Every structure is written in structure tokens, then in C-alpha cells.
Amino acid sequence: MTQCFISTSNDPHLNLAFEHYLFSNVKSNDRILYLWRNSQTVVIGKFQNPWSECNVEKMAEDDIKLMRRYSGGGAVFQDLGNLCFTLISGSDYDVEEQKSKNNDFIISALNKFNITALASGRNDILVNERKISGAAFQIQQGNLMHHGTLLVNSDLDRLQLYLKPSKDKLETKGIKSVRSRVANLQEFNHLLTVEALIEQLRITYTEYFSDFDSIGYIDERILNSKSELKLEYENLISWDWLYGKTPAFTDAYKKRFSWGEIELLLTVYSGIIKDVVAFSDTLDNQLVDVIKDTLNGITFNNKVIVKQIKQRVAVMGCSDTQSHLLDIISLFE
Image (cartoon, one colour):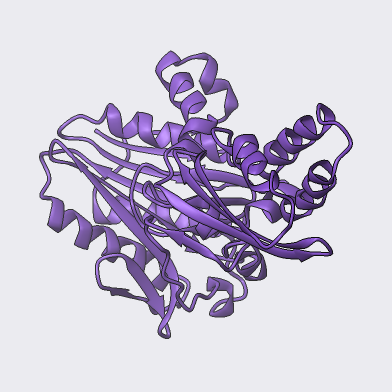
């Protein structure tokens, strides 16, 4: 069966959950085209560290969503000017042949707008040597999911604003993103719109593969009709999936105060501070031990850290250590 699904929702976690639902339920002779757009979201790969890939504090400040996908690859910023595509084929079809045909299909659709594109390596599509599409793959029991993005009129300044770590001193074992020269398709055809591209992809797909047996439109209401999908959605928005799956890393903080210099090294595993190393030239003999005791075992989140320090300060008697802890809060604000 050949099917087309178009999402009218811009909820990134719903859209990804539906993609996973489609891939989990694909039959051996199925072919599926799924097109969707997300509101402003930073999407990271399965094995990436959000703290090293993104400015998580700035994202929280600007209400930018974080989404961790199931496939590998690097971090990307998505908004309504970016069209996501998912191409699923069942095990009856040769995986490598499908990857090649999928790229040819997208390139052919772009040619309809007088845009000459070419595939680069396994993952990218370029126009004038600039990346307008990146993709990733999943293979499961012979079934292929080829999914990626097409930049139409995305805010590329936002990409630079959020796709960078908030601190310089960050050592991580996670997979790092490789930044590429990117461009919007509107640079090559100013009349191109996301809506026009959706329609052209739908038409070109039937030319390359077969007519659709069905075309469906989805929105938030689908969560109430499919319990499997709702469970998947709830997992994708959970703290454990977004942050708890992060590989171990160490974050460093350093600042000089009137009473001395403090340097903190926080080792984080699965989003939890597992070890605290503190260096200081302060004359306050209690400070280092109090810091370790206060931060060890809590969630690695600036608001949580500040709250924990304030709670510790509240139960302490008036002392130099209490005053110094209040100063240290500035490292996390």
C-alpha cells in the first residue's frame, strides 16, 4: 500500500511520535510519504548531549522546544520555514536502491521550481554547493526510514543563536554536530513556499513510485484515538528521554570573588550530577565540602541547582560559608 500523510500540527513531539508510529507499523509492501513542520525547535540526535550542542539556557528563556530523535546525526534548528520529510519503505524493497531513489525524487521535485540540486554523500542535498537538506536513516527488520529536512525560508540567524553551547569549558563523550554552510531554497527561487513544495512533493512522489491508495491529514486529535501513539508522545516529552539519555560529561565553572576564586567541575551522568570537584584559594575551610554535599546527586539544571543552594543557605547560621554560597549562585544564573 502507498500512503501519504500530512501533519497540520506544529507540535514537534507529536510529529515525531507519529513518524515512529508509522515506522513501527509498516508492512513489507508499504511505501509512505509523511510531510510535517515544527514550531521553533532544536532537534538533537539520539546520542548527543543537549548541553554541549545547544544554548539550553537561551532556549528556555525564549521558549524554544528541545526534541531528541531516535536516529543519530547532528543537531538542527527547525521552524515553520523548514519542511520535514519522512520516506518509509517496507522490507520488500531494496534499502540502498530506495535511498538513491528517494534522493532522486526530492531532486526532481526541486527541479520543478527551476532549482538544480544534487545529492552529496549519503545524507545531504546541495544547491550551488550549499546544503538545503540533510537526512538520516533507520533500518529495522529490512524496513527503511529515510527522513530529513528541506530549508525553504527558515530563520538561519536563529540556527546560530541556539546551536551552540552556553559555556566554553565543556568536555563531553557525546557525538558533536558538524556545522555546514546552509541556504534556504527561497534564495534560489523567491516564489517558492512551503505549501507549494508540499504539493509538488506529493505529485512527484506518485511519478517516481505509484499513486497513493490514501492521503491523510493528522493533528492533535489523533493522540486520543491511538493509545500506542499517546504513550510514544509522552515518552518523547519526558525529562528522562530529553536529558536523562545524555552521555556522561563534565561541565566547568570558574569565577573570582572578593573572598577568593572558585572552580567547580560537575560530572553529569544521565542528567544527574554524580561527582563534584571544587578548587578554591578561599580561607573558608568548610566551603568546598559544603558545595560537594549540596550539589551531589541533584538534577543538572540551573534552576534546580540555584534552588538547592538557596535551601542549604536557609538552614545555615549566619557565617562566611553562607555568604560565599550566596555568591556562588551567580555561576548558575
